[in-house]
Every structure is written in structure tokens, then in C-alpha cells.
Image (cartoon, rainbow, N blue to C red; front, top):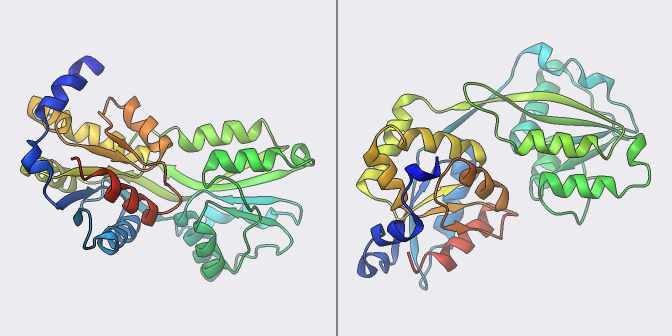
Length: 291
């Protein structure tokens, strides 16, 4: 796979000239799902200011997420006990639970422990009126594993994990790796698919290809799923592979970067600020001045 891509030295030689790269207006291609893309776009526009680069974000979601409204989707959740732990792997999982509560009368035991990733905790509080059950842990799934594993009663706990059902593509390793690591630390893990994740349609993928061909200053990836679909978009022709090799790619944290690299994508920027899209936007502002 790697041999099909430009080497690092040739890739760098294909990057825009210094005069082009020093432009203060940066066109950022956002490939995140619609709701996430909107928040990321707003963060980029807010971050644009009198100093450093300003951003011109354009969104073309490579991943589509859909809430599962089927009544059977939440049937196992009423068995959650007061001593159990519930982990929401994303905002979409929180939104799905809120929908089930509204439409199917789902009752969440208040004595149980509820956990969201980083600033998703505020979304959990807003939609479900549930407090964050873990504090001070790294805002990632593996951070949750570490924090739960440090509990003296971890091996006696049942943990419910609400996450995606992946359709039409290989499941990125993030959630499966989390479930494996969690299973080694707690007594029991119960996975509940709360929403569907699938690749974007052909029209959107063509839009992404066209935008890259026309020229963007950076492709900003926020998940492994986006990286997988992006690879499929650009591998359709030799021109596409050359284009992506000459287009800077930024990743929202090390987990996304790992997935992108496993797809053979050339990663230029790995944000070490991944608690929120605001932090990612700030990191890009600091690091895109050379691009």
C-alpha cells in the first residue's frame, strides 16, 4: 500500500510554493459528519482573527450518521442496574438515548454511573440531565478504560457501551479496541448499537475529489471512518493519489492519525489538542502558517 503513495521527500516537493503557502486565507476541507462538521466549521470561523491565518472552511461529510428509531434498538437498556456504568462513545449515542426516552419511554436509573467523552459531558447533561460519572480522565475512550480500571470494584462492574452500527465499510478499530481493552478491566461489557454509521454517497465523494483537485490548504480528518472513505475517494485514479500526497492532511488527535496512517494516507499535522473542535481549530491556526 505504502509504495503506491508518494515518498515523504517527493510529497514535500509537490506541496505549494512558499508564496502560495504563506497566504493568510486557508481553505479547510471538513469531512466530518454533518452535526460535527457544523460545530467544527463554527470553531474555525471563530478562531479566524487579525493575527495568524484566517479560515475558509468548506464541508463535504464523508461519513453519514443516522439515529436508529426502531423500537427494538433499545430493548436491552431497561435492564441497566443501579450499580452499572453506561458509556456514551459519541454525541450521537447521547442523542439516540434521548430519542428513545422521548419516543419509547426509556427510563435510565439515576443511581447508575454515566460517562461521556470530554466535553460531550455537557451534551449528556443538556439532553439527558445526567451528571458526568468520571472526572479528570483523558477525553478519549482509552482514557475511560484507564479511569474505570483504577476503580477497586472494576472487575465486578457491568458496563454498557452505546456506539455505532457500522454499515457499508470496515469498522474503524477505535471502538472495537476500546471494547477489548474495557473487557480486560471490568466484569462485563454489553454493547448496544445506538445509531448507524455509513460512508457518504457517491455524489458527496465526487464533491470531495473535486474540491481536492481544485485545491484546498488542508484536509481535516476527525475520525478513522473519514480516513477510510477518503482513501477510497482518492485511490480511484493515479491523479487522485498524487493530489492527496500534495495536500496537507491534519488529524484530530493520535487515534485519528493512527487510522489515517493505517489507510496509507500521508499525515502532516497531528493535533495534540483534541478535547474539542475549538482546540483543534486553535492548533490548526498555530500550525498552518507554514502550509
